[in-house]
Image 1 (cartoon, rainbow, N blue to C red):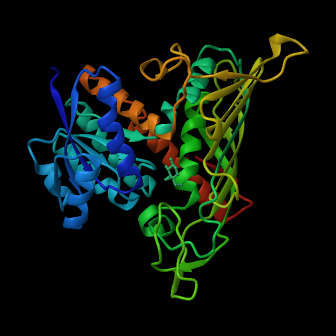
Image 2: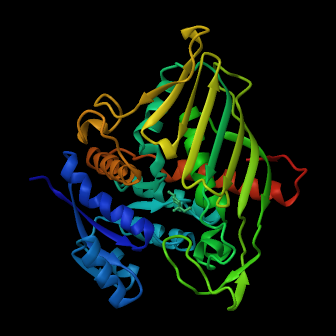
Amino acid sequence: MSESLNVGMIGYAFMGAAHSHAWRTAPRFFDLPLAPRMTALAGRDPERVAAAAGKLGWDSSETDWRRLVERDDIDLIDICVPGNLHAEIAIAALEAGKHVLCEKPLANSVEEAEQMTAAAEAAKAKGVYAMCGFSYRRTPALSLAKQLVDSGALGPIRHVRAQYLQDWLTDENAPLTWRLDKTKSGSGSLGDIGAHIIDAAQWVAGSSITGVSAIMETFVKERPVGGDFVGLGGVGGADGPKGPVTVDDAAMFTARFAGTAENPGGAVGVFEATRFALGRKNAMRVELNGAKASLAFDFEDMNSLWFYDAADGPNSGFRKIQATEPEHPYTGNWWPVGHGLGYEHAFTHQVVDLVGAIANGEQPTPSFADALRVQRVLAAVEASAEDESRWTTV
Ligand code: SOE
């Protein structure tokens, strides 16, 4: 029986449920070097947090996150609350010697992200590790895309094209939840989903964004306060009181990537993040065009990676790689002969990699420093969008 890794998690809404599922499932399908124990769940409301702990499989509950940080029987703090709380919790946890998994985006400002990164660097020197939850890195097909780029199959990358399209805010009466309040979320589509494609693009392409030119828009300026809050959206009271939406509904930008030895000029990129793309549910897309080959991923077809190799000749086209074979990243531990995976599996793989890194005394990725690079791009996009004629360096 392996040594245990006692986890304390804060927050139990959508991400809390996804993380709980991952902590529970990871040791059942993967041989982990440490055995995660779902020790305690924290939330403010005593009845609701106790009910959530029971439902999601946590051994106990607390009504103050500080209690988790103080408890001697907790080794790792998992942060699944809005961004305005990330910095305070993560820094306190790291200073108390707890490993940290923090949801994305890392923080609500570059300053906070820098402080968190400094705390993570100090903790690392003592064998305490921090990781940011850019979960899509662990989707097998996207992970395969990274392997193909790293193997040189694409050659120098010319174009990066990334979109994250959802539609859950299209209803003008969807309630004013925390994701629409800048003081809690930091930004709107940009930080919530744009952060994912920025991270994925930089990671898969193996190069950082150096500058951006952006526009942002808020289509619905006011929304009902309260109302039925179902999942992410829900329907508010159309005739009831309304409050201001203080974040972007859509963010778009062009970008330049740093040059590399084989591609000194660097790639150019186009990014789009919106929660108003009616009919698009979770279309997280990344397409790369290299000098030798192209690849394309769309989360709505998440078990596939599309690959075009110019060497295949004039009668070729994009071919679909079904990234469900045992040879593909993560898939060998799941269902036999290509039965396919879903949204929740990337969170499970995130736990697998985090636990493995902690056990080996290695920095898990994405580190807070990696997430800070995303945060800097978010800030540059906002600065550029304030004056649409402005190219903004990252
Ligand atoms: C809402 O847009 C959301 O839940 C994001 O917050 C998540 O990070 C993403 O994985 C799915 O969509």
